[in-house]
Amino acid sequence: MISHVSAVPAQRTRGVPAGGAVGGAAGDVGAVPAVSAVERYKELVGLAAESVDRVRARDRDRVRELIAGLAASQERVVEVIEREKLVRAVVRVHWEAVVELLWEERWMTMTPVPAPDESVPPRPQEEYDAAMNRAFEALEESLQRRTLLRRKSA
Image (cartoon, rainbow, N blue to C red):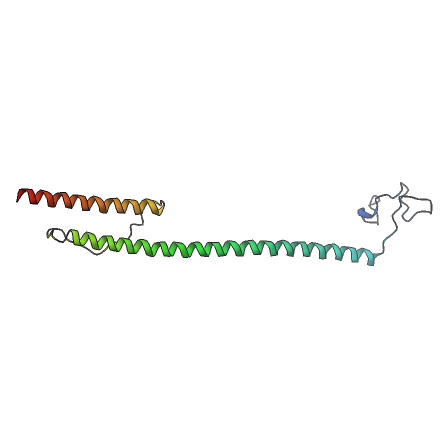
């Protein structure tokens, strides 16, 4: 038995007198007038439409944010690809310079540029660039010292 349930929706019962009279007598100050099913339906449809509009507006804002983020990430990918091309070109130039420097060393077998070592832990590219430059400079210095020693003994 459900005797405690009202036929009037909860949001329509605010201000209803304790006796439960809806629409009350002319003297009832806080009474809420009865709402027909059609009016209630229109009210609910209006609330649903407002909710849909809010969700769509939020979705449009989110789409704008995502498109901006996508554009930024695409620009970053282009920058990384350009940086990779530059690094590969610098490596190739350094390798050719090393081959020229070591050309007189007949005992040393020169190979093409080795493939990148993928097992190296990830670090900022600047660290790898600096390490490559230091190694090349160290090779140049050692070959210059060696040439000076050969000249002195000759």
